[in-house]
Length: 210
Image (cartoon, rainbow, N blue to C red; front, side):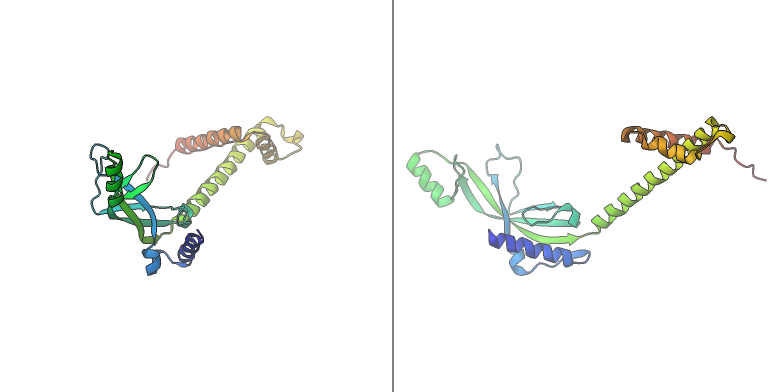
């Protein structure tokens, strides 16, 4: 178990230190078997037959300690090790052991192709930075929408007041009103303000070309 943790720490260190692009793996990491899969050799039980090589691509791996936030594309290559048998209680037997068990019990055991999966490549991308830029853009859009909404509400409160009796600025009334709404009501108000601002912009007469 400690060996696996050390390998995970080593992988994480390589990923964190690497620039965008291919992450170079030393031989002992490239040769490490991260997981094993079994594929039934009976075509009635399995609709796939991968032959000698089974390839998989993922963006996160708990085994390697890599998450989607690391922005990596991980390629695994599963090399066919040979044929095995799996008993009802989950024990994996080699072909020789399976033959001996079948001779002793008189019962056939289902056969599977065993694939040992190794990491063939890790490519580091700018995924996390891109997600952060998208999030910042979305946050800025929300702030702009709230600013537009304050303007619409301020105009509304201004129309409701008589100029000489106004003790607070319309913007303060608008902020107080928004703070009293629950999040869903505030979101609905922002969307209504966006629609109103868009409609008013489209309804403005265009200047005639001279």
